[in-house]
Length: 386
Image 1 (cartoon, one colour):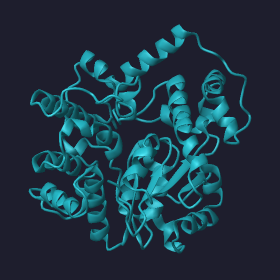
Image 2: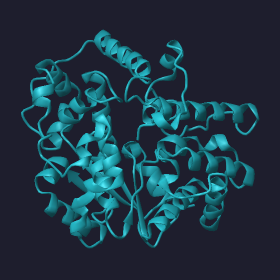
Image 3: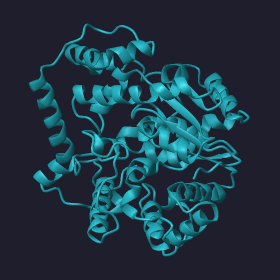
Image 4: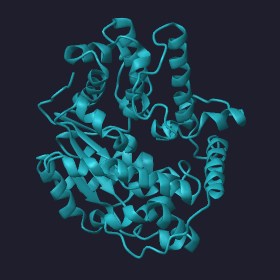
């Protein structure tokens, strides 16, 4: 069943390296809106609810609540809780609304909002852009904030990051897939439910852009939103290589970084993969496309898979996040063997069974290559990267 909250939930999304964390941190400074660190709950759990069995069964539901509550990127959203009972607390809070995935999600975000003394909550997970349908099924009055950035800049930043695609073909493809995924929703949803931010406009005119965002959300503008970079979240993220800019005021210096960081060949491959999306979004100076052969595409995909797995344990790597993702796969199989489920539903929940399932459900590397390189899991919180 759907959950309709009096205070409309906010979902911030967009292709990774497009500014979603910036928007998350700014909104989290609003005196009425609580936005914690990313949950990745929709990619991780929503397509796999069938593996938990009947959620009206308290035992099955408790398993789901525990896995969602204890698997947060930032433990307990940084709240002062009793770790021994946090999962039970979330399950109990969810039952007051609905014994479902949405109930647990609302309970967790509501608990955080309560802890911060704010009446309204929002959440940011980049890959939620592939789950808009499920979000609106769970929260029909949700407001979606989508940020778009030049795919060439987003790809250049990806290639310099400690996670994500490792060559221009795979980076361009993932960005293009994201734009394709949201296009129907942008056209279908009313203006009070879908809001587009263009990264380049936002960083050039932050005050006017933030005011427009607040107006969409039905909230008053507050000057303190510009102090986002002083918050613990921004300062913590700012100590990492991939989010160093977050610890400083908004700047337009990252616009057009692809011109220095992508070769002409890379830009031409980007034009071949995603030129239509770039043009549709108003980006120009697109070079003539360079089409790759099927063998070259296969080579890029394989090398991307190999590099992703082999670098999970590298400095700034994502081994802790990935270890929990792999553990969740193990738990699904254990439930299958215990008889809680036997077959994938027909039709399968998106993106189960698709070529991109592992990527779109938040895996940082394909299990095939993690097994090939015998990557050992590591659950040490000190190595966790948000």
